[in-house]
Length: 209
Image (cartoon, rainbow, N blue to C red; front, side):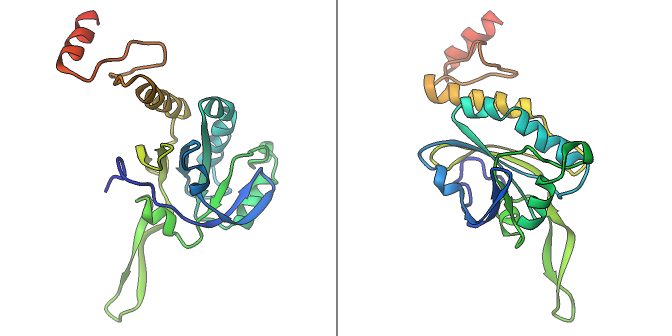
């Protein structure tokens, strides 16, 4: 089920921060009332599409920060795996140079609570616990406002990389709505006309476009 309009599930889990330091207890609650959060899941460390996305978020990190937002990544790998990958140079397939936090969801509970775990636990006829599917996360992205409410979510299957520019556009739309109370029409971008949330406002916008 979608989390949009609901409180984002909170957690305390190990993470690597600043690209080099392991912390035992990282939580999104530290940003409540202070920052918008772009929280994204990726399937696995030391893979192929994942580093392109992770580096792409880093390349746009200042743009998120200028908008008062933080970026946080997460996968079901261990914090030690994250740190090893962060220590590997980009030209060798690593993610060295990435500075935003990367959370270790070893228990898979974070991915499960956000609805992006690509499988589920069940029991066989003998009463033994099994797992059906892939015990890793889909490419889920969640935009969480300062009140801790999920305002946008997008989930991609493993082979399909996400657009970081689209996440910035969506963040811009949220910020515009929060500041001006206007709603943002199809393909809206910062600097374009928005709309009043009314039948008359819609008619006026459509008449001009």
